[in-house]
Image (cartoon, rainbow, N blue to C red):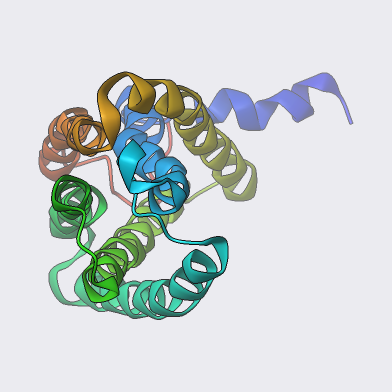
Length: 217
């Protein structure tokens, strides 16, 4: 293989229409959600004196492995149905709400620290259900925006940028939580959704961003 053929997928990827908006979507859309996911396990495990829920490791595993899994599967199914009913462009707003709203219930239980496990399970269910809905729509956006030539390579590049956009905020999440505590951390993670609102607006109203097969001319 020549270097020209090897680099062609990279070149055509960055020549896509509205590549700047797509890059913003990949790098910033999951900033709040990635920090939430990173800090949920320590939040559930930490002693109440540290602001956590004081659960043991086995309880966290059972609750996330049952309630969380069932909620995520149900959310993923609903996400697919939403796309079928209202279309991908309108579904972006559903994705925005489902991906970021679960921060607020976590902020609530961090504030009141309920003793009843049912409240913790309810918040876990809402978070994983929202993740299932949002990630199904998110994945469909990735699929649609790489349609055309070199779509496998372009999908791999988009996935890589998505992961990069999650790694850096996740690295900082522990430090941020130590500075402000769990309650304020979850509110902070919710505020990280503000760039997502701008990106959702731009993608919802731009005619070319979600056009299947959008390739440079």
